[in-house]
Image (cartoon, rainbow, N blue to C red; front, top):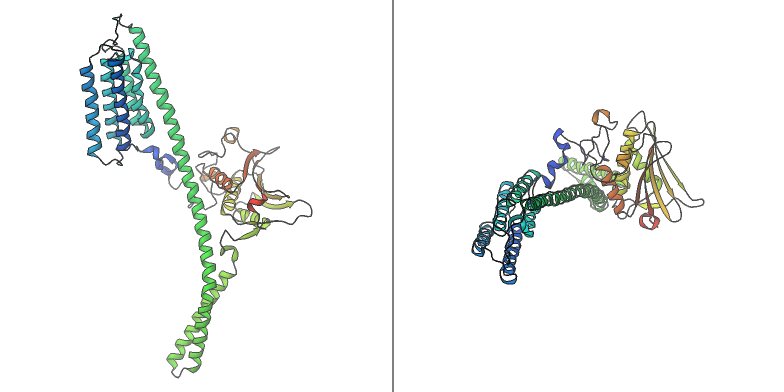
Length: 450
């Protein structure tokens, strides 16, 4: 949904492939930085050293500490090489990231195999590389790292040295070690899935918010161009008048025909410039700065319905303004957020309305509200429950759309976000007996120009 033509809408499908919003989302590519990997590795290596020190000097467990030290030292050596070989801010490719994290999984598994395998409760450290992969890599690399960690968890249930202990005890049963391995696999899947879902939702929201900022920036640039035109019309008036006076004097006093013709040409071009500036000055609604601009509530609703008044011969779009008795219709600030959002709502309603769309503005002593109501089928229950979130849409394709717009479910999200930035309370609901209603309400102090 967009207030712009189908070829310009920010959530419009430009090509068949563009409808996959993830083609531009950060989740499609890995973003694991060298510095992040090196820092987290040092944390894990520090934990491994602390664990071995506690077992050796605190609990005094017998274990092959020399071999364990070699494994930890190998991990530290690889980490030093990684940190030295690349700039800290470099983003790894997916294959390189998979190789690095797989190496971490192997190093941890080898260490755990020397101190009990799945019988050692610190088997949970295998979650660390998988969690990092879930947070920074696309799905396929994550599955590779997660699959390796899960496979080694089950291998450690049957291939490992006995769990160290001061008092020799029977080796834990195979059933227990297998159950511990399965539990670790379940933990890997659960944590990776949880982190992955959180990252996906964050990426979706970041992409949608980025589009929202782009919409607002475009509106602000258009308004700034209007302000520049108004300033140019004001500032250029005086020098053009001076040029016209001098040119007339030259034409009157010219002794040569060529000089006289040149002076008359200057006069004609100066008059043309003054006509252009006059037209700019005659349209203040397009040539004033949004911060200082004001318009009546009636003008606002007319601007909202104007782009879609004749969008379909089957749907009539009307606007009304009502208010408390004996109260003057308020003037409000021209905010591009409000115009864009409600034009989007009207455009959406055109595709779903049966025969009529009503845009109504109401005001009282405390508040101002605007509502878009249509007589269509209303919001589907599954859509209504998530309306206002990004990528939620039931709009038909171009062949079934009256406006020709193909949305990707960003219009309502963008509009709701923009309106809430102005201080509005935005609501969506179904009307009785049918139809959809979208409304926004502001305290008068936020939008009224006194």
